[in-house]
Image (cartoon, rainbow, N blue to C red; front, side, top):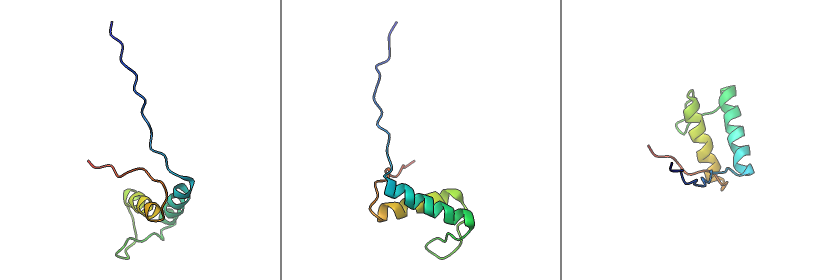
Length: 69
């Protein structure tokens, strides 16, 4: 019987600065005040997450890399 070799998976971590920024943006989305670059209100949760991660990266926080599909 063959056993699988265990691989250590390193999970991407977000810094505390990044978490604060993401939390702030998601609160804006929930209250309905988050706006995209064009000035329109953001309605999609996925878009809000993308904006939050982007802003966190711009502020210099350690945030996981983008996932390309």
